[in-house]
Length: 252
Image (tube, rainbow, N blue to C red; front, side):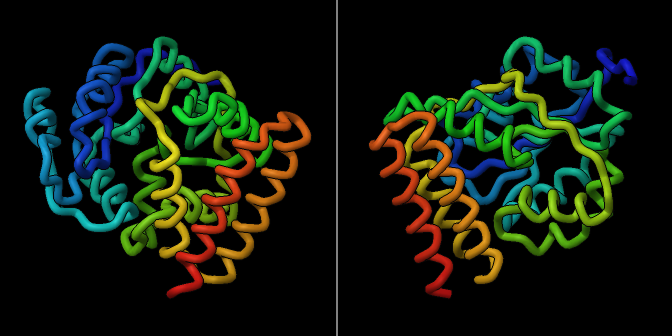
């Protein structure tokens, strides 16, 4: 294993109307890792998002449409070998730099975050189990070899689910990635509405065959979750989200 605990990274944050969480997100980066530049890719915010970014002297790129395009644009404007991509509603915790130890052995590494949904305390365990057992490479936090990501030019055309397609691209190219189940990151004020918006967007932006496959996989995850947790409220929330995802996709 290559030891890279002193690695200095550029960090990319994709944001839109993120004033409620962005300050805590940026501060956590500065407090917990060696960061070269923080690049905020903004999708047209109308609140105080850009003011917060400016207060930290972040590099700001405005009016980028599409999550895949935002991700790709961020990496184009980064300069370090490895780049951290962090969602604007996530914060890094002490110990995140331990993931640097896996760089070199793996082209991409991430930590499974603590996701404390306000409406249901068991959501975190469900989310953790799904990520661990199905090897889901969600981009809420991920460190990637910059040149590798830039080879996946298809990202520029994606409105959402950039993580889903990039993981498939890596699998197709036999590229190894590492997902640590140690939680060195945490969601900030995560809610059921956040999950619902994400699922609806997913449904709108992937083709119907991939949508059905994802829907069936999610139902299987929910079934496994039920046998472990027997939390009927959580099951109801998850089923509602997945039905909404399917309905959104079938309208297109």
